Image 1 (cartoon, rainbow over the protein chains, first blue to last red):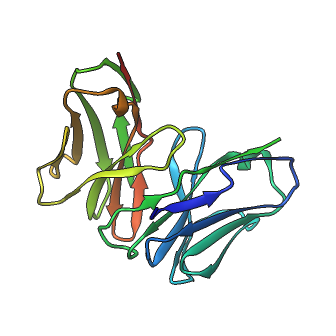
Image 2 (cartoon, rainbow over the protein chains, first blue to last red):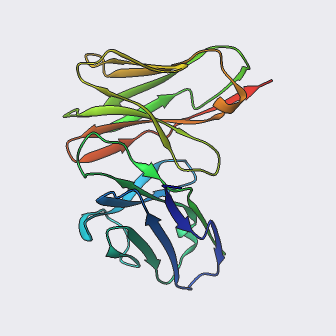
Length: 114
Length: 110
């Protein structure tokens, strides 16, 4: 199936741990994104990569570090997890950045920090 | 400040009924407006996109309208089905930025 897939779907971890979320798209898109959806359901962009290059880096703690080994993958690594990091994280992709095309989203990773 | 506000926050209707969701925005400059449907536990899926010159656009039982003068958009759902239960999110693009609304949670009851 052509899609954006992210793993794991659920992640429960203790404060202070380091964790990674993986994302892969087989749509041939050039641009990938990480979004955070908080408890109020707002989707906020965190990072955007176009052809493995960082093009958007919103104000997020530097404990969050994206890694794009190739244009089909954009992983999110989080160091020293805090309670406030608990949220659903969505990976998305689009053919091009800054144009009218829509995003294709993954199913989300629900991160719970205890 | 660029903002997108949606109303109502949540809505419960009976299967087969129609409903209309509202989106008001204060975004400048305006590029386009998109409605997404987000099922529980899934990522958002695009329903329709509206540009400045478009007033109405339909996608099956979904009809979106845009009034660029008043900066309002609506999403009308006709003959609702149980599968329409989801959150509906309005997103406005301004140049290189996407401004997301908080969504309307729609519940369809049999």
